[in-house]
Length: 89
Ligand SMILES: [Zn+2]
Image (cartoon, rainbow, N blue to C red; front, side, top):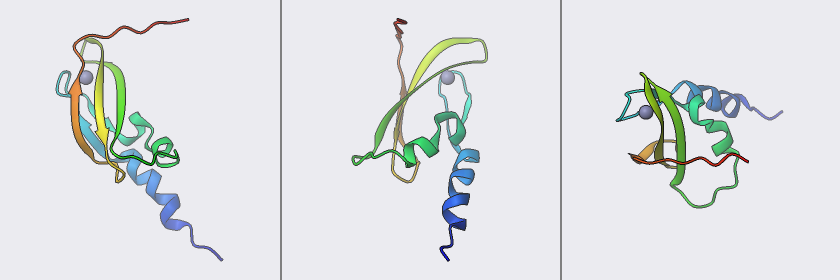
């Protein structure tokens, strides 16, 4: 019988983990916000990945926080874009 306890608990743990705090609006960003399970299960073979997380918080208008995330889901670097344009089809 295969013991999947650890692999089943890991995404749960990472979802609740504080990944970073946005330097612009101070929003605490948790694993669930950036869908860590999707990152873990993706076939990324080059880390860190570059992840743009667009959000609004504390009455700040929508802004993208670019996160550079390592394979252990720790943030290696981050920056907020000053300009954003989303084209909707
Ligand atoms: Zn923010």
